[in-house]
Length: 176
Image 1: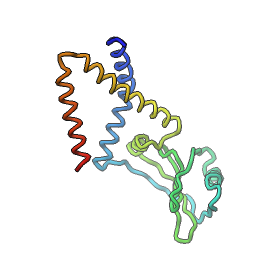
Image 2: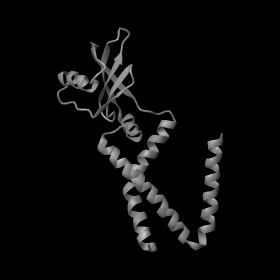
Image 3: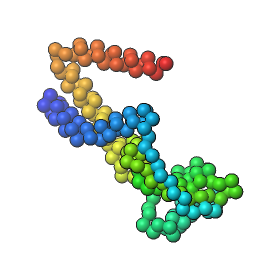
Image 4: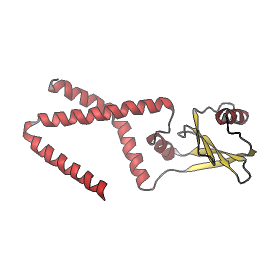
């Protein structure tokens, strides 16, 4: 592959995915600094009884009576809490009460919470597929950048020294 083709691959992939990668960096950094967004929960209904089988269908029936336009892709069942997904928009939580019944809450995440949920992979299925493509393209961006850097003969040594220091720093951080 010639340098121009490699450069074009690197250039177009990185320019297309820059907004997405920037969002990932912003949300990850915000999360690590303790800024996780906020959730507004509203109690909708109490004393809901669910059987162990077909919980998704039971929840779908309950929610269709409350909000006929609401759709969800799947549920996350933690036993004492059941959550409709995706959580990148308004969603519902069912929390188990002491008497074994559930209370239903509508949860509205703010913008930061929504994009952090995207970062965690809790978005719609189509977005998850896009994130897989993003991951593959990020690998290609890094490999093509590495390759382009190695083609700059005057700076190959600097590149490898800097990369070795970065690799060593990563190794030391893992060992802490």
